[in-house]
Amino acid sequence: MTEELTFDSKNTIAYEANARVSIPTYDTLFSMVQSYFRAQWGEKEASLLVVGAGGGNELAAWGPSNPKWTFTGVDPSKEMLQMAEHKSIQLGLEKRVKLIQGTVDDLPSSDAKFDAASCILVLHFIEDIQQKLKLLKTIKGKLKPGAPFVLVSAYGDPGEAELQDRINVWKTFFFDVGYESSKLDDMGKGIMKISFIPEKQIEVLLEEAGFTNITRFYSTGLFAGWICHAE
Image (cartoon, rainbow, N blue to C red; front, side, top):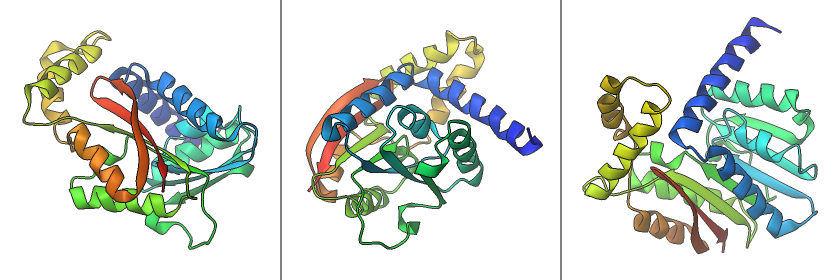
């Protein structure tokens, strides 16, 4: 094993461990998304666009048990994409996986459209509302008509007590696994640096981007997921 691979493997473990504390039903989320996609195609071949593919968790969750699925993943982080690449090699998926450093805008121009797309834990890192909408519109433009799309994001109104209550619960996830209580308030302030917007506003953005049949199918702590279809 090379030094680079060892370094990335350690980062992968740390990243996934933190994600599983922050989102206690993290693995269940990916299983639910897989079931949603499977319900669309049965045993047919399918091409998936994975937005925010760094780390390779979508590849690991869906690739081995769905041999007719192919994946195109985009992520701006070189290091995170290296993790995804190493994971795809370890799982024997490399022939069905294409990884691109950048954003959806950096995908090669092609008339071919994807059968589905996912955007998991990405949207809340985009501050500007119009940039959020642009991302969703760009994803929709890469999909076949009727293609399923899954969006998972932090949500909530920063001005409402309801979100603060959920943040307090979220902090206890970390306390329960051994984090010092003195650090939890800083964590609560830090989480507010991501871009929370109300659930209704997320649904409006999806509608404006050209998605229909929008349904929330998942919620844990600070995060929720929506399924929908491209017009």
